[in-house]
Amino acid sequence: MSVSIDNFLKNIYLLNQETAGAVTSSNLAGRLEVSVAAVTDMARKLGKQGLVDYKPYKALNLTERGNELALKIIRKHRLWELFLHQVLGLDLLSVHQEAERLEHHTSDELMNHISRFLGHPDFDPHGDPIPGIGGDVPSEKGVIPLTEILENQQCIVKKLRYRNSETSDMYDRYGLMTGLVLRVIRVFPFDGSIEVKYEDGSEVVLSGKLASNVFCVRK
Amino acid sequence: MSVSIDNFLKNIYLLNQETAGAVTSSNLAGRLEVSVAAVTDMARKLGKQGLVDYKPYKALNLTERGNELALKIIRKHRLWELFLHQVLGLDLLSVHQEAERLEHHTSDELMNHISRFLGHPDFDPHGDPIPGIGGDVPSEKGVIPLTEILENQQCIVKKLRYRNSETSDMYDRYGLMTGLVLRVIRVFPFDGSIEVKYEDGSEVVLSGKLASNVFCVRK
DNA sequence: TTTTTATTTTAAGGTTGCTTAAACTTGTTA
DNA sequence: TAACAAGTTTAAGCAACCTTAAAATAAAAA
Ligand SMILES: [Mn+2]
Ligand SMILES: [Mn+2]
Ligand SMILES: [Mn+2]
Ligand SMILES: [Mn+2]
Image 1 (tube, chains in turn orange, yellow, blue, green):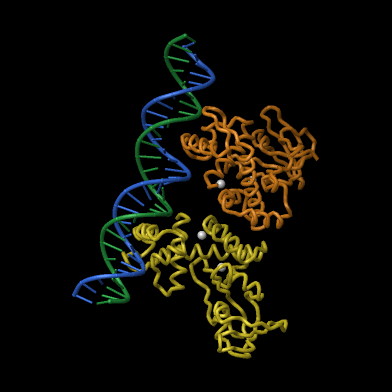
Image 2 (cartoon, chains in turn orange, cyan, brown, blue):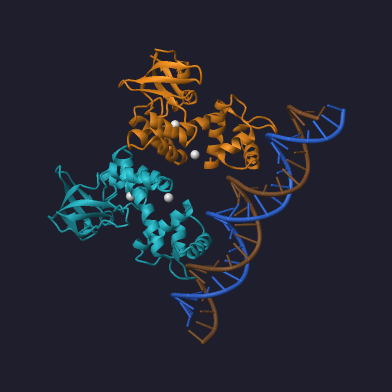
């Protein structure tokens, strides 16, 4: 397992969730920032190794074994993120960048020490589930976009979807973070924007697009 | 800077101290576990880059810039070791193995967070000095081998030299660790072995060879 | 000083992971 | 159905970092 293979498997897994099972070469190439030809090469190679289900011109899928490996890397990534955030105080953008490298260079043993130190947590600071040692993924049942909360209902923010560094800035601007309790004051169907009230009484209006990237559970 | 270059520079630095300035290609090759030819290649390459002072058939030396880079890597290595030991409870053998990889994949920013978390320490858990951000190396003044302590004198263990995994076992066996207070009870000139008394009153005899790898300051 | 030995360098080649450009499939549009 | 456009594969090649084996050099021994 090299860094390239790690990232290849991990991003098939993640992209598979985002695109509902239709991971294409160009899709993955964009994500990994390599040429499409490089993806074809790697896919064929990992196909032979039994990690990827590769058929020319077809969507890419992980095999059972490929899936297990992907989950192990994601586990390391998200445990590192939580550790760096909670213990060392790095911000949510930095933790991702550091974890992106550390995930490939940490033994299972060290990762288990970190998991124990954190009390075997289920979610990372972005609200994403941390797979267990056995590959079990904590459920996110009841987590829905903020756009589905009705007027006057309360909810707890569980997950913020990070699309780029700009979303990070916006979450900062509005003070949005996991664990926050919000009450939806008003929904504006005109443009989909939503007025919410924080626990401290302050109120802001979020754009529909931003709100659709904020996930929460009803309170 | 790649992992290979990191390790090349770091080990010239360390070997330079151990051999008093006579770092040969075969010497370094053994340390890095690569062929001697690979060392020559890399030395010439880094010579062109101004990191190594390379002259065919001569001993290898770091340039000013190469030295700075080596110290940065050593700083990361030793800070990681202390962090993994003190915070996460890894044993002294594991911390070295993990640090050996993490040192290459940690940003300066993260390392500074870790340094602050630890209170900007001067020594790693093996007693080796941790270079500062500016490249200043904490002094080890007064640190001498246990073999130089006279009968009935007390000393504090400051540094254990790890030669291989066996030394590690022996330090464990005798409960030797940095910070320990010892009193030399008796020196046996016959074979150089030394009888020491621990603070709890127990007494053991250490071989001369083992004692020469234990460093301490007089109390 | 010449010869022998140990060490270092040079040469040739392999693997991994990438690139660009050309050839090929596939599904859609005319 | 034929042509086109988009996406994918194949081909050729490059850089980094290794290897082994042969040639060159330096140091030690005869
Ligand atoms: Mn990564
Ligand atoms: Mn995350
Ligand atoms: Mn290393
Ligand atoms: Mn150390």
